[in-house]
Length: 139
Image (cartoon, rainbow, N blue to C red; front, side, top):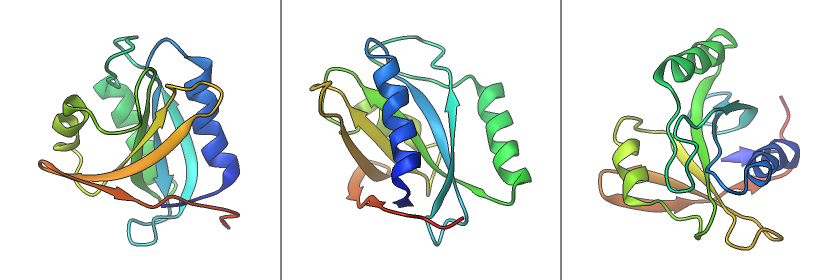
């Protein structure tokens, strides 16, 4: 995914604002082939848990429709891991089955002073880290 520093900073800031629970949200892209992030949408973790996240289905539908209304596509779902490295958990892998072709951005906060952000393509049990290209992304 290509993402501007500003958009990536928004995701990290969201994670840091909720150090005791997993934050979550989605990232809109211009198109799935280009994987160029254009906007970050925060969501609420209905579990307010440090161990798992879930976006209320009606909120997720609203976000999905807002993204489509702009002519964009859902490119990534993001969340944080408050005590562990940014690697997909078994819960993440199970949830990813419902969202093929969507990247999973995870912010690891095991060291709060130095958040680690990684992105993954998850296909069944296959987990592949994909690069995050940070820079100026034209909109």
